[in-house]
Image (tube, rainbow, N blue to C red; front, side):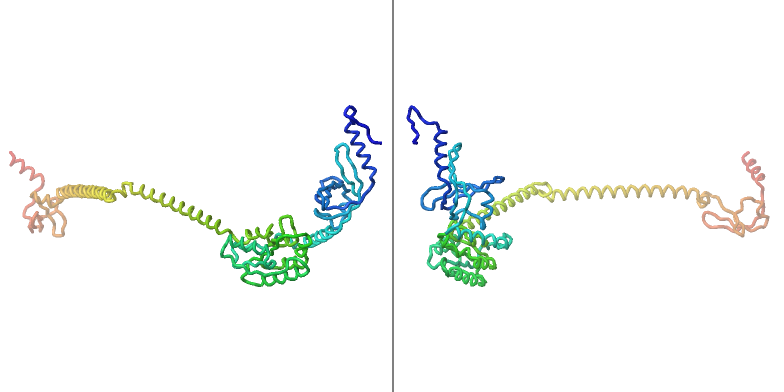
Length: 418
């Protein structure tokens, strides 16, 4: 029966919610087809939350699936996969939300393609083909740029024009190949091998202007992925647009979100480089000027010092000081010489005063025996003895005729005195 309500007799929210829940419960299980728009696996929860979107209308519904069911899928589901699910609609009255409790999930159509690509990605990743350690560094300024793209395509124009806008002297070696279809993988691989053997080519760009998942399938082909991994020349992947993620993006040495963005990766911007060079020159010029200013100030300070302001004056003062020192030294030596000469004269006078010669000059004489002995007493000689008398000047040989004792001499002297 329809619920009877009015403005005067409204139904509570809980009643309406319970009625909606009862209506939905009577639907039972249903098969639903759609595209996985969002996938959320929360840590520690036994339930996986997914959002299933209609591929035509803008309608989506939340799915809940047991974690065991989700983990058992091989290959695992990814966002964008098309699926058919079996589930029972449920309305949660407390939250006022509708979800589909899923008990079975099957991939179909495009979902199968995405599942195969995901399975291939896992296998190649396990082999290490996507390892960062294997990736080459892009050259700063390549001699020649290899470009693989479709003939006269928008991707070709984007790469060429934007690259030459950034660096007008950029040189390209273009290899044309089908960018979709059955021949795409073979032609792209052939151009890769040709450009990789060219010694002038320093980087290779593979460019395409986006497309559907089916159109981009060649760029997830295992043959192409292994060929790129074996290239010695750095590879830039410029396939599709930002949401597109073919396996080529993972194995390439660099990924450009668009062909236009590839130009930013392969060549520097000449205007920016010139600006950086000018900035570097300004910094060097400023540093050099600062150094010159500092050295000039130091030279000015040195010139202001007395020793440099008047070098002759300082030298003259030193010379005058040396003359004074020399004069003092001479005076000191002269004084010492004079004192030494006076001392010698005094000593010589004393020596002369004490010498026998001085005594002789006062009238004394030295009497010597013939043998040379000095006669100090008269009794040392007898009458008639020979003797030698030494005077101040010369000597006399005498013969003793008479000898007087000291007493006789004193007596005679005394008498004489009396």
